[in-house]
Image (cartoon, rainbow, N blue to C red; front, side):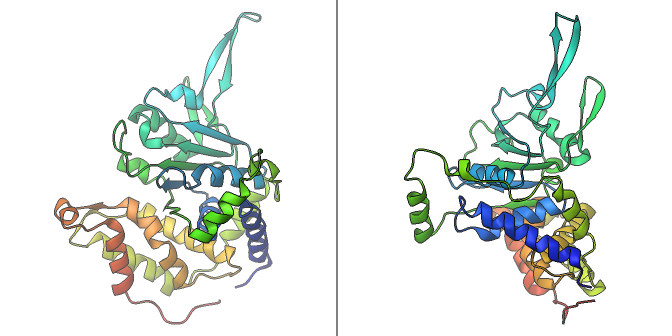
Length: 322
């Protein structure tokens, strides 16, 4: 079932990807998956070493979508009020006035989230799950769209606080950027032969209000029952694997379903293919599962188990334009 609305999603995504690629080189697939998460109404955890462009990617996306952007640098002394905001007393009118924090933005970069204390990390939990924050007993709705991009350095452990499983489950996708190849890194060096930041030249290509329309269009993407069964078979394989102590919840199933729809739409299809599921399975499932201690000692990682499931679970034949 190919719709005009899905074709609009593809043009919308291509315009953003083209603009972001002006400053974020050689990683088109990462930009695409970031848009998949945005179109699915979820959030992204970027796990990678410093200096590979995580901040540039987040800022470029905000600039091209003309969204309000905020960056939160996490440190052990960061307080929840530093994120949500605080009431400030005004002596002129003898009243308290709420001054909103950086969380009241459309796109929020939470840098090095694992350096914040669990108390501060929990301030993000309600925002990411419910689209609101509670300040002094009052619920305050967050702007729409609301998109969190959190970064985590998986190498350094000193002075960090590992994210609890409940919070990892709030991230729709977990992504890694990786190092660029030599040719791309040469382009990066050439782009910096100037005093100003290339990000300053980025102009909006779509309005932030368009995000909600595109998110609605993604829900119209058709998913064949056979493809749905394939998703559930993959998740069941992971849940029952002998090396898995805790598998993905139904929230993981829903995340994979929504992301597959979004990827299909970004590629101009009104229907989901098994390839959409295979491309996203590891990014959706790997951070939603716990591997047993024995398996970890043998060097088995969550990604290895997902890859095994992709190899062993039969792929539905045919594809399926409805």
